[in-house]
Length: 150
Image 1 (tube, rainbow, N blue to C red):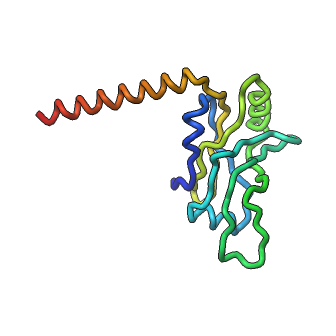
Image 2 (image 1 turned 60 degrees about the horizontal axis):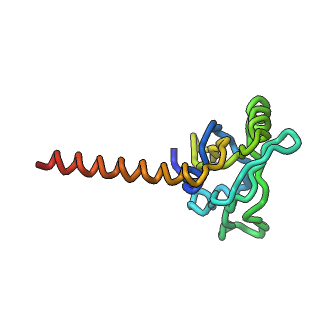
Image 3 (image 1 turned 135 degrees about the horizontal axis):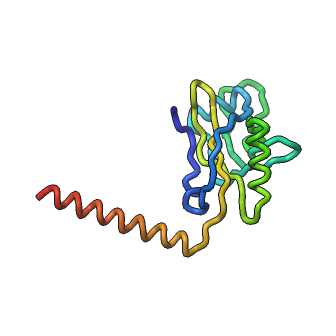
């Protein structure tokens, strides 16, 4: 499994509740561009519309070697999920304060997959608590490492 793009900001700004693996409908040049690592999920999100899931705001740079193909880097891309998953996402996303965000774009058995999550936005004090916890954990690890060296 190879990661092509990650949404690092999502883990900082959101509390993840559930994750799903979705296929994504792409054109040939988009696949080649993703394999070159030219995808960005930073401002992306997903919506359920008309009984289908869509990825919006993801930026996949145009592939330079494609012939005469107009490539819109921010076009809406259909997510490939089964009906039960789409209905569950629709129900969860309609709850107060919940949204569907992409976490990472990766390859599994030669296919491009997208990990999406139902998430709620963290409050400022939650972010501060997470940063403080990481700092404490880092200091503990550093102290253990020093102690083992002696």
